[in-house]
Length: 183
Image (cartoon, rainbow, N blue to C red; front, side, top):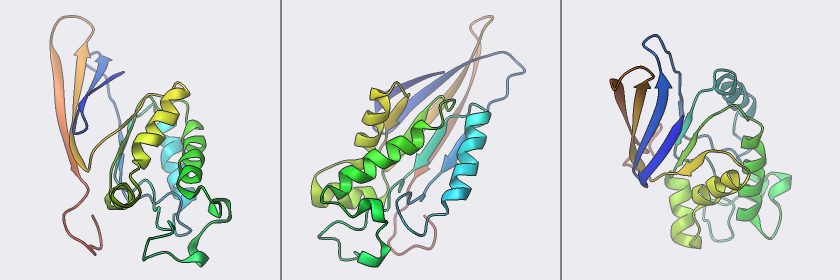
């Protein structure tokens, strides 16, 4: 599989295939990996399935909860996991998440989109947690890219024999309103 990032909102995923090829893909959002409320075991189960089936993973926002920064009005010391009680809170989030995602070595492609939580951190702290996570993974040889708050992923099945191809377009958007039950 080859992932091409055209800009933060447009990607092409080329998959070499034959006419009977089946390809699954994991699509998710609002994981809030670092939150005490994250159902980490369920997330691990889904990622293990993606790993076992060699499926690309697109997380369309809020990989991180990231609500414990010093100036976040939603901050609650009781909601902070022990490993994040450090002076370099945002660094700790990214380092921990990179170690976590590296376990799934057979996931061929990772795309991490911005959500409202990452966007809030970007505005307040001038750092992009998704870019940092993707960079850390790429430095370890993992095919990972950061994306925007919305985007398009064109999945192109390139047939081995001939010039024909089938393509599918996936559009994602993290949401447009505040206080929504589901984005």
